[in-house]
Image (cartoon, rainbow, N blue to C red; front, side, top):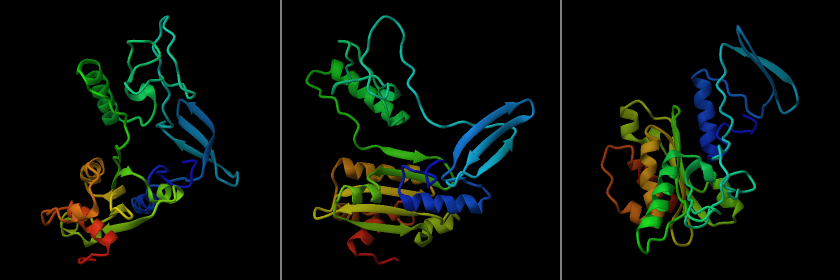
Length: 261
């Protein structure tokens, strides 16, 4: 990874916990490194990387999995479709391209490159075409999930981004170590972290690393969509023992009402 954290777009604390977890599992992460040279031969591959000081190191393996980004695969033909400055298909607020009657959705119109986002965009575009009076929505709130171990999931702003925007907020972080369900299933690594805006108490962002994080994030996405406050989340009874209790616990911590940590 060229950047200093394993998951650059995620909350910094989440990346740090994942890096420590990977190290415990025997996984070496080269952070702040860039690829200088690649070689492929009959006996395997060689990759030369350089650290921030320019010191080079050669990695050898049987195979190399390349996952360094996404580029648009544009349709051919005689139609001249307008593109963004990054080469993606340009669309208006109804997902219509610069060619009248031609619509586009998903990865081809740019990030985030996520299947669930692409599905949402396609449905919005189609309903905009055929449902009278329907006004399509563009993607604003969406979950990002990383299917590693421990799992990582997030929605909304990171603490880093909230500070850069100059927003006033409180942070609630509930460790899975304090969760009865997490301890019972032997998955007590990680935490639930929620950013609560001030003075209204809305959820600005949420970040989870730990067991079933990718399942748990939906509740916080719904909270953001409905503009729910920490008080409404706190007043919602969460079954015990469950992992999702961690969401309620996190907002209680942000509000200064914690009773279990």
